[in-house]
Image (tube, rainbow, N blue to C red; front, side, top):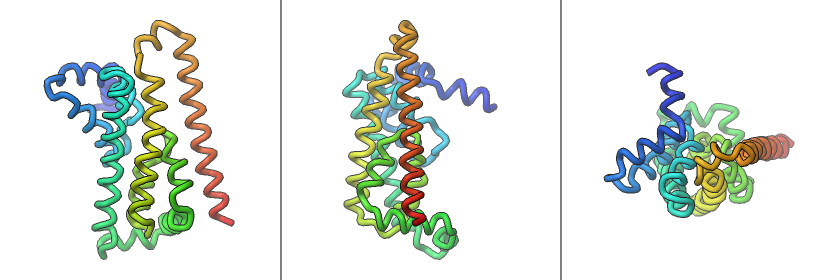
Length: 200
């Protein structure tokens, strides 16, 4: 599959068509798609969440996406926590950037993690792995993931639950694009702020 074909495949319309095609499986595809993004971070979580909201409705789509992405994040965290400290992964602990991120997570705890996970463009796959390698309390990370993902998934679901309206109403599409840009911009500023504070 070429890059162009992959881009065409990973669209909200195609995801909607796929959810309709596999309707007999119920909510399983809607849960598996956002869950898979935790293991394959190049997949567009944004697209999966919007497709779920459009296919299942705002509240049901939100819950399905939140369940899937939260489960995926926690699975990665627990897998890394279990095997990440074995000798085979010792090179990760020695990497300066990873060590710095681990110390940052251990010192800062719940608050900054929750904020970072509220934004859809935070590299949550990297956060899950580093958190698993760090010494953060399991309860803290589980709570940060569940609450942060709840905020993030609801925002995306609210934007995407009526995809047809985005096409019919250009003004709404413009507002959605501005909202997405603001989420990206604020998320990056939050990351930079924490990075600056950590370097002091």
